[in-house]
Image (cartoon, rainbow, N blue to C red):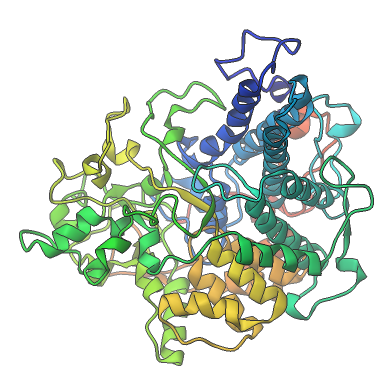
Length: 622
């Protein structure tokens, strides 16, 4: 990993013939480096490698109590993630390599920026430097949340000492938060406006996300609205944009979030459904033309609130940071950093309704308006049941439930399961789900083919290549809910509740926890929320362990046998609570990378020789 990432430009055709002595030589060169740094996000967020999507937020969805692994019998990576097991020593290596690759590119951008003469152009210089710091912090945050204590790489020159893993609590999080602080202080106080770039407000939001995880998970702060103390004030690392002696306290984090509210210009979309492509205006038109199918769930929307209308969907008014996609996918995979399918949001394919040779779920008469896909990571019974209980108790209907989940028995009564389906809950994912139209030419077509400006990619497979919905990494709703969690002031949470049409409640920690679960269901935030609400080494009675264990015994469909449901069981005798307690929610470090570093990096607890191998080894259940 460290050998391959030292030469961070080896996959960028614009710069491979240039040398460090001549590149970067002008501002446009630094912009090219900046684009290369960001491009790692596409490899993480799009494309299918090794039978699994590399998006860490998708992994965290699978590891939470909101998803099952599911898919077909051969889809062992998805099921391994959900059961906290592994089928091979290097099964989770791809993100380890990609994230260090992103860190290396960011380091190069930071180190070489002043090779350029920025006379009379310091604002551009500071913006690009701030983006370099932000992306280094962002990639490092994902890396340590996935793998725990890892080597901290802050230079393109990697010494032997730097290859040793260090404490995330003591060293990695202070560096992450220093990077985000540098980014905040260097970047312009202007919205990126859906450009895909970070801005000052993005950095402030991620300061909160990273600090809250550090305080909750490592410092075991519990309910943050009531938590205070010197141990929650962090000393930062001195670097440009983060002066010597800088600290970060809970009050500082709150101040950053309030700055976003006051000065960021963000606002919640009026209709929750506007965030998702199933509300596009072409489908809305079919719901009102009286000619064919009609998707009634969006029929009551205002047309101006449809996904593809100004201010909605991609680049909408509440989108702070996202992964963007374009129609440039190709079939061939030519390397770790050059997966030509990365330009398509493959989450739409992985979460699509599964179909195969024994049925025709790709037919619009059976699944309109939703398209087919791999069916990996189906929503859990727990998510539906817990949400329904909350509605019943509160005597309300939350539009986000059916805005997030497809209730197969009621919405798609003609849907049939594939003969090798595993862990089917009766629900499917509506967020990020690709949709079809009566107006499309084929049953496996995508609505994007009818969108203005569409052009076909060389992938020539709309069901796999035409997925262009932004993947949200930070929404304004998260800013509001983080503020309520930190301050106990319900007014921020009430805005999110009002948008969903649910009763506006007073603050309690339970109400806040539920609100985050409903608002961000299947967006990859739930798992790390559970971890920070539990605290490190919290055992089998923690919030996370108990929520995961509550999956046991739920009734699921396997091997297409809808009339003969079976009880969901853990893959090993350990059970979810023990597997979570043993691992603290971390994945195993790839053995190949441990070996590459001459065993200077140690395997994580729960995946090492101190845990019986049968507890973390993938086992076929179905």
